[in-house]
Image (cartoon, rainbow, N blue to C red; front, side):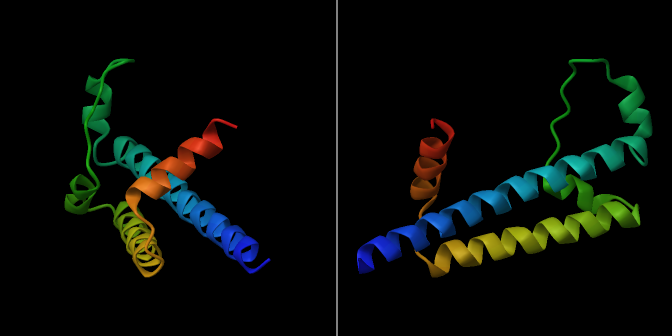
Length: 106
């Protein structure tokens, strides 16, 4: 019974980490949308449907928009918390990817 409780706890922990990853991705997308409608409006106008703009999280750090900067800080905090939870609980990237793949295939 004890192992079953531990397994369930681990399952919840892995789901929590995946949820944090999804939240980070969603906030990153919101940040990109703000940037493209604000400071990067000229860049946005020069792109056509289907064009690809490769942007990293660090690209947003150079921006002046306070809302973009706030979202950058939020993502930084979530990434730091994600890494802490992962490290404290000895969750490898491989375990997380395997778990995520198993959940997506169901």
